[in-house]
Length: 282
Image: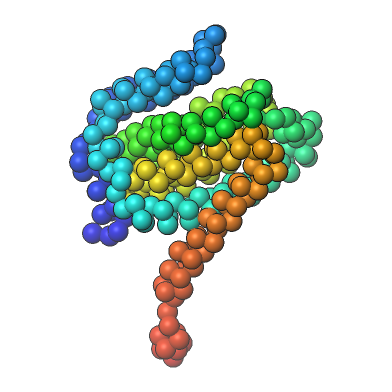
Protein backbone atom coordinates (compact mmCIF):
# COMPACT_ATOMS: atom_id res chain seq x y z
CA UNK A 1 0.00 0.00 0.00
CA UNK A 2 1.47 3.39 -0.97
CA UNK A 3 1.66 6.35 1.42
CA UNK A 4 -1.32 8.19 -0.08
CA UNK A 5 -3.54 5.13 0.23
CA UNK A 6 -2.43 4.52 3.81
CA UNK A 7 -3.11 8.13 4.76
CA UNK A 8 -6.54 8.27 3.25
CA UNK A 9 -7.41 4.99 4.94
CA UNK A 10 -6.53 6.39 8.36
CA UNK A 11 -8.88 9.29 7.73
CA UNK A 12 -11.89 7.39 6.47
CA UNK A 13 -11.79 3.91 7.96
CA UNK A 14 -13.12 4.91 11.38
CA UNK A 15 -16.66 5.57 10.23
CA UNK A 16 -17.99 5.48 6.67
CA UNK A 17 -20.29 8.35 5.77
CA UNK A 18 -23.32 8.00 3.50
CA UNK A 19 -23.87 10.52 0.72
CA UNK A 20 -27.34 11.42 1.98
CA UNK A 21 -26.11 12.27 5.48
CA UNK A 22 -23.20 14.22 4.02
CA UNK A 23 -25.51 16.27 1.80
CA UNK A 24 -27.76 16.95 4.79
CA UNK A 25 -24.84 18.25 6.84
CA UNK A 26 -23.53 20.29 3.92
CA UNK A 27 -26.97 21.76 3.25
CA UNK A 28 -27.45 22.81 6.88
CA UNK A 29 -23.96 24.29 7.02
CA UNK A 30 -24.35 26.37 3.86
CA UNK A 31 -27.88 27.53 4.68
CA UNK A 32 -26.91 28.66 8.17
CA UNK A 33 -23.88 30.53 6.88
CA UNK A 34 -25.83 32.29 4.14
CA UNK A 35 -28.73 33.15 6.45
CA UNK A 36 -26.51 35.65 8.25
CA UNK A 37 -26.65 37.80 5.11
CA UNK A 38 -30.43 37.94 4.94
CA UNK A 39 -31.63 37.90 8.57
CA UNK A 40 -31.67 41.47 9.88
CA UNK A 41 -30.73 42.48 13.41
CA UNK A 42 -28.33 39.66 14.26
CA UNK A 43 -25.81 40.65 16.91
CA UNK A 44 -22.34 39.13 17.12
CA UNK A 45 -23.29 36.30 19.48
CA UNK A 46 -26.47 35.27 17.67
CA UNK A 47 -24.74 35.36 14.30
CA UNK A 48 -21.94 33.10 15.57
CA UNK A 49 -24.47 30.67 16.99
CA UNK A 50 -26.22 30.58 13.63
CA UNK A 51 -23.08 30.33 11.50
CA UNK A 52 -21.10 27.95 13.71
CA UNK A 53 -23.32 26.53 16.43
CA UNK A 54 -26.08 24.88 14.41
CA UNK A 55 -23.80 23.48 11.68
CA UNK A 56 -21.36 22.04 14.24
CA UNK A 57 -24.23 20.44 16.15
CA UNK A 58 -25.69 18.82 13.02
CA UNK A 59 -22.40 17.73 11.45
CA UNK A 60 -21.23 16.55 14.86
CA UNK A 61 -24.16 14.17 15.11
CA UNK A 62 -23.43 12.92 11.60
CA UNK A 63 -19.64 12.63 11.56
CA UNK A 64 -18.32 14.28 14.71
CA UNK A 65 -16.83 11.23 16.41
CA UNK A 66 -14.57 10.53 13.43
CA UNK A 67 -13.52 14.18 13.16
CA UNK A 68 -12.64 14.54 16.83
CA UNK A 69 -10.91 11.17 17.00
CA UNK A 70 -8.33 12.30 14.44
CA UNK A 71 -8.15 15.98 15.42
CA UNK A 72 -4.87 15.67 17.36
CA UNK A 73 -3.16 13.06 15.20
CA UNK A 74 0.48 13.62 14.20
CA UNK A 75 0.56 17.09 15.76
CA UNK A 76 4.28 17.66 15.23
CA UNK A 77 4.01 16.70 11.58
CA UNK A 78 0.94 18.91 11.32
CA UNK A 79 2.94 21.92 12.52
CA UNK A 80 5.62 21.24 9.91
CA UNK A 81 3.28 20.57 7.03
CA UNK A 82 0.76 23.20 8.10
CA UNK A 83 3.38 25.94 7.94
CA UNK A 84 4.95 24.55 4.77
CA UNK A 85 1.72 24.12 2.85
CA UNK A 86 0.38 27.48 4.00
CA UNK A 87 3.51 29.21 2.71
CA UNK A 88 3.58 27.35 -0.60
CA UNK A 89 -0.11 27.80 -1.34
CA UNK A 90 -0.02 31.44 -0.21
CA UNK A 91 2.59 32.15 -2.88
CA UNK A 92 0.44 30.32 -5.42
CA UNK A 93 -2.60 32.37 -4.35
CA UNK A 94 -0.65 35.61 -4.74
CA UNK A 95 0.53 34.62 -8.22
CA UNK A 96 -3.02 33.75 -9.31
CA UNK A 97 -4.23 37.04 -7.83
CA UNK A 98 -1.62 38.96 -9.83
CA UNK A 99 -2.75 37.24 -13.03
CA UNK A 100 -6.40 38.02 -12.28
CA UNK A 101 -5.58 41.65 -11.48
CA UNK A 102 -3.68 41.97 -14.75
CA UNK A 103 -6.57 40.53 -16.76
CA UNK A 104 -9.02 42.86 -15.00
CA UNK A 105 -6.79 45.85 -15.74
CA UNK A 106 -6.98 44.92 -19.43
CA UNK A 107 -10.67 44.04 -19.76
CA UNK A 108 -12.32 45.91 -16.86
CA UNK A 109 -10.01 48.59 -15.40
CA UNK A 110 -12.77 50.06 -13.23
CA UNK A 111 -13.06 46.77 -11.35
CA UNK A 112 -9.46 46.97 -10.16
CA UNK A 113 -10.19 50.16 -8.24
CA UNK A 114 -12.74 48.26 -6.13
CA UNK A 115 -9.87 46.39 -4.50
CA UNK A 116 -8.97 49.63 -2.69
CA UNK A 117 -12.07 49.23 -0.53
CA UNK A 118 -11.54 48.11 3.04
CA UNK A 119 -12.27 44.51 3.91
CA UNK A 120 -15.96 44.59 4.97
CA UNK A 121 -15.21 42.43 8.03
CA UNK A 122 -12.97 45.18 9.36
CA UNK A 123 -15.29 48.11 8.78
CA UNK A 124 -16.45 50.03 11.84
CA UNK A 125 -14.32 48.09 14.33
CA UNK A 126 -12.81 49.99 17.24
CA UNK A 127 -9.35 48.96 18.48
CA UNK A 128 -10.93 47.39 21.58
CA UNK A 129 -13.39 45.39 19.46
CA UNK A 130 -10.54 44.33 17.19
CA UNK A 131 -8.52 42.95 20.10
CA UNK A 132 -11.56 41.00 21.27
CA UNK A 133 -11.99 39.50 17.80
CA UNK A 134 -8.31 38.51 17.80
CA UNK A 135 -9.19 36.22 20.70
CA UNK A 136 -12.34 35.07 18.90
CA UNK A 137 -10.22 34.20 15.85
CA UNK A 138 -8.17 31.74 17.87
CA UNK A 139 -10.90 30.40 20.14
CA UNK A 140 -13.94 30.32 17.84
CA UNK A 141 -13.50 31.17 14.17
CA UNK A 142 -10.38 29.12 13.45
CA UNK A 143 -11.50 25.93 15.24
CA UNK A 144 -15.11 26.16 14.01
CA UNK A 145 -14.28 26.77 10.36
CA UNK A 146 -11.60 24.10 10.28
CA UNK A 147 -13.97 21.62 11.94
CA UNK A 148 -16.66 22.37 9.36
CA UNK A 149 -14.67 22.76 6.15
CA UNK A 150 -11.68 20.50 6.69
CA UNK A 151 -13.15 18.05 9.17
CA UNK A 152 -16.63 17.65 7.73
CA UNK A 153 -16.67 19.01 4.17
CA UNK A 154 -13.24 17.71 3.10
CA UNK A 155 -13.14 14.74 5.47
CA UNK A 156 -16.62 13.76 4.36
CA UNK A 157 -15.61 13.85 0.70
CA UNK A 158 -12.63 11.63 1.51
CA UNK A 159 -14.95 9.20 3.26
CA UNK A 160 -17.43 9.00 0.40
CA UNK A 161 -15.12 9.20 -2.63
CA UNK A 162 -12.41 6.80 -1.52
CA UNK A 163 -11.14 6.21 -5.05
CA UNK A 164 -10.79 9.87 -6.02
CA UNK A 165 -7.48 11.68 -5.69
CA UNK A 166 -7.43 13.79 -2.56
CA UNK A 167 -6.29 16.93 -4.40
CA UNK A 168 -9.50 17.11 -6.43
CA UNK A 169 -11.57 16.69 -3.26
CA UNK A 170 -9.47 19.32 -1.49
CA UNK A 171 -10.13 21.72 -4.35
CA UNK A 172 -13.90 21.13 -4.19
CA UNK A 173 -13.93 21.72 -0.44
CA UNK A 174 -11.80 24.85 -0.85
CA UNK A 175 -14.19 26.25 -3.47
CA UNK A 176 -17.06 25.71 -1.02
CA UNK A 177 -14.99 27.37 1.70
CA UNK A 178 -14.42 30.40 -0.53
CA UNK A 179 -18.06 30.50 -1.62
CA UNK A 180 -19.35 31.13 1.91
CA UNK A 181 -17.37 34.38 2.04
CA UNK A 182 -20.16 36.11 0.18
CA UNK A 183 -19.31 39.55 1.52
CA UNK A 184 -16.28 39.71 -0.77
CA UNK A 185 -18.48 39.32 -3.84
CA UNK A 186 -20.92 42.02 -2.67
CA UNK A 187 -18.05 44.40 -1.86
CA UNK A 188 -15.59 43.91 -4.70
CA UNK A 189 -17.78 42.59 -7.53
CA UNK A 190 -15.83 40.76 -10.21
CA UNK A 191 -12.60 41.88 -8.51
CA UNK A 192 -13.52 39.55 -5.63
CA UNK A 193 -11.83 36.84 -7.71
CA UNK A 194 -8.56 38.15 -6.24
CA UNK A 195 -9.38 37.56 -2.55
CA UNK A 196 -11.22 34.38 -3.51
CA UNK A 197 -7.98 33.06 -5.03
CA UNK A 198 -6.27 33.63 -1.68
CA UNK A 199 -9.09 31.89 0.19
CA UNK A 200 -9.04 28.86 -2.10
CA UNK A 201 -5.25 28.66 -1.73
CA UNK A 202 -5.56 28.83 2.05
CA UNK A 203 -8.23 26.14 2.01
CA UNK A 204 -5.99 23.91 -0.10
CA UNK A 205 -3.12 24.36 2.36
CA UNK A 206 -5.25 23.40 5.34
CA UNK A 207 -6.82 20.48 3.46
CA UNK A 208 -3.38 19.18 2.51
CA UNK A 209 -2.28 19.42 6.15
CA UNK A 210 -5.41 17.58 7.26
CA UNK A 211 -4.84 14.86 4.69
CA UNK A 212 -1.15 14.10 5.17
CA UNK A 213 -1.55 13.94 8.97
CA UNK A 214 -4.51 11.59 8.88
CA UNK A 215 -7.05 14.18 10.02
CA UNK A 216 -5.27 16.66 12.32
CA UNK A 217 -7.41 19.74 12.93
CA UNK A 218 -5.82 21.46 15.91
CA UNK A 219 -2.88 22.83 13.91
CA UNK A 220 -4.98 24.06 10.95
CA UNK A 221 -7.30 25.70 13.51
CA UNK A 222 -4.37 27.54 15.11
CA UNK A 223 -2.92 28.61 11.74
CA UNK A 224 -6.38 29.71 10.59
CA UNK A 225 -6.91 31.69 13.79
CA UNK A 226 -3.49 33.33 13.51
CA UNK A 227 -4.08 34.31 9.87
CA UNK A 228 -7.44 35.89 10.67
CA UNK A 229 -6.01 37.57 13.76
CA UNK A 230 -3.38 39.47 11.78
CA UNK A 231 -6.08 41.48 10.01
CA UNK A 232 -7.73 42.46 13.29
CA UNK A 233 -4.37 43.30 14.85
CA UNK A 234 -3.96 45.66 11.92
CA UNK A 235 -7.14 47.45 13.03
CA UNK A 236 -6.14 47.46 16.70
CA UNK A 237 -2.65 48.83 15.96
CA UNK A 238 -1.93 49.87 12.38
CA UNK A 239 -2.54 48.43 8.92
CA UNK A 240 1.22 48.21 8.37
CA UNK A 241 1.68 45.97 11.40
CA UNK A 242 -1.15 43.68 10.32
CA UNK A 243 0.30 43.41 6.81
CA UNK A 244 3.78 42.74 8.19
CA UNK A 245 2.47 39.93 10.40
CA UNK A 246 0.75 38.30 7.42
CA UNK A 247 3.91 38.64 5.36
CA UNK A 248 5.93 37.13 8.21
CA UNK A 249 3.62 34.11 8.31
CA UNK A 250 4.06 33.65 4.55
CA UNK A 251 7.85 33.98 4.75
CA UNK A 252 8.07 31.45 7.59
CA UNK A 253 5.81 29.12 5.63
CA UNK A 254 7.92 29.42 2.47
CA UNK A 255 11.11 28.70 4.43
CA UNK A 256 9.51 25.62 6.00
CA UNK A 257 8.18 24.51 2.60
CA UNK A 258 11.67 24.73 1.10
CA UNK A 259 13.10 22.78 4.03
CA UNK A 260 10.45 20.06 3.61
CA UNK A 261 10.06 19.64 -0.12
CA UNK A 262 13.42 20.54 -1.68
CA UNK A 263 15.38 17.76 0.10
CA UNK A 264 12.70 15.25 -0.93
CA UNK A 265 13.04 16.28 -4.56
CA UNK A 266 16.82 15.99 -4.37
CA UNK A 267 16.61 12.57 -2.74
CA UNK A 268 14.38 11.33 -5.55
CA UNK A 269 16.91 12.24 -8.26
CA UNK A 270 19.37 9.51 -9.29
CA UNK A 271 22.87 9.78 -7.85
CA UNK A 272 25.78 10.52 -10.10
CA UNK A 273 26.87 6.87 -10.36
CA UNK A 274 23.41 5.76 -11.41
CA UNK A 275 23.26 8.59 -13.89
CA UNK A 276 26.56 7.48 -15.45
CA UNK A 277 25.28 3.91 -15.76
CA UNK A 278 22.19 5.14 -17.51
CA UNK A 279 24.28 7.20 -19.92
CA UNK A 280 26.51 4.22 -20.69
CA UNK A 281 23.50 2.02 -21.27
CA UNK A 282 22.20 4.51 -23.78
